[in-house]
Image (cartoon, rainbow, N blue to C red; front, side):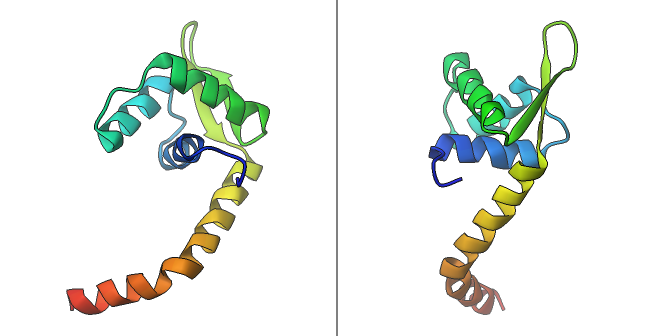
Amino acid sequence: MHDLTGFQRDLLFVTCGLDEPNGLDIKDELEEYYGTAINHGRLYPNLDTLCEKGLVDKRKQDERTNAYSLTRRGRREIIDRESWEHQYISALLEEEAERAR
């Protein structure tokens, strides 16, 4: 996961959170989050890279559309990344929980 771009990590997280999304599903989610258009020339090559790295599986949904899902390795990488991040932000999360009370 350390060798992925931030955009590629975001693609992984969105793919994880949706049920076998197609490229347009992923694109829509990222556009909503980023607040800007994501062009196909950026999206699909990065999805292909994640497939080549063994983090995402791609299968035909129909003649024109592919569906994506995380591989076992992809799921493990997300869990490891979340654990690594959590060690650095846990104090912040606890502070925010206290303020909310």
